Length: 424
Ligand code: GDP
Ligand code: IMO
Ligand code: MG
Image 1 (tube, rainbow, N blue to C red):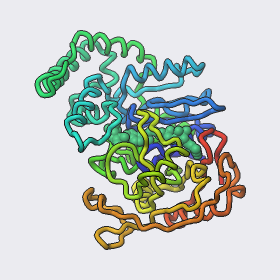
Image 2: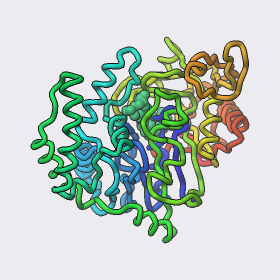
Image 3: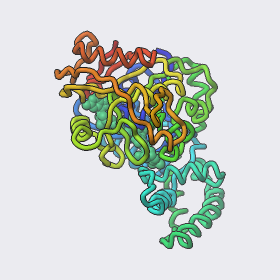
């Protein structure tokens, strides 16, 4: 199948975890390259549910190996907890997980600052996952952050932590008037994290080079979605990393040319958690119906997801940015009971019709969806594994999407379980 990238092309939670787990059967390596514990990737295998935040979803396949690349921001106690939870379930992680020595760390003060700055924003909150993502990536860019290998070098750790904590405590205590952090305690904790993680740490850039040269198949697991991209998403209502395809190269240290398929994952409708404009959002009963049927509550925070119709204008933008070679539509079964299904084919902005997603948020906020309507199938798509067994109306809906985007739909997900998947 070649090396495959699996990328969210909406506002996250498209079902990437399920698809990565499904495709992992064919790959030797599954790798994460951006994002952090803000990701919540759900995989259901034989009725058992796993939610992964940092460890690639391939870990659930015995024998497959996983990498957390340099572009990921790593929260050490959360990673240790995730390893422990998996091992408690009988899933061996040691020897199968490789952690980049140059990945930047999410520290406890990042989580606190995430919460404090959200509070400060009041009504203009982004609605972050409060996992410290923004503050951690900010420190990375400001060149003040700690990296995984600092945890393994006590002297350097001491020096760098003292330096950075001085500033963090100043902000937390003097500006926010909150309790700061004791250097001694944090230093002790950090040394313990280093000790526990050491066995996983390596130079993943060298490792990736060896893997690619050997011809072993790699699955690149994206986190978040294109519309949350720091450059190309609905800024400032975005996450703090590039969620589009370029992150694979920088977040792992590989040159272009080694990705053979780029699969965009989209739900058959749209969801979004947190603030920011969402033209096709359905408020009230219609939105609630999708939320109930789709179980649309965040895998990381449990927050209800905002729900609405599929938006082809936004999808086209995401498809271009990522150079998608194919599309996978998930959660088709959620539409099973609907009489009518709508899809947004253009925006009306101040009386003018456009098929381009505007970059300016104020303009995007005024976008009113122009819909095309489809009859629902009101039958059972749930669990279907054959394209031919999908109801005609469902196929018509999917064929319209692929024609509009000019990208083939090669997989359809018809339920959360690994086996509930149509390969066309
Ligand atoms: P991710 O962040 O992209 O991996 O997606 P999440 O795991 O956060 O959210 C997707 C949710 O939809 C999870 O609860 C999945 O178990 C579930 N899911 C995935 N695919 C399907 C599907 O085809 N049908 C249904 N009903 N649920 C699905
Ligand atoms: P997966 O990988 C959905 C959203 C948050 C918020 C914004 C910024 O599971 O698809 P952050 O904590 O990153 O600073 O929050 O981004 N967000 C996600 N929404 N799925 C995710 O990840 C998300 N990760 C962040 O809700 O609106
Ligand atoms: Mg998720």
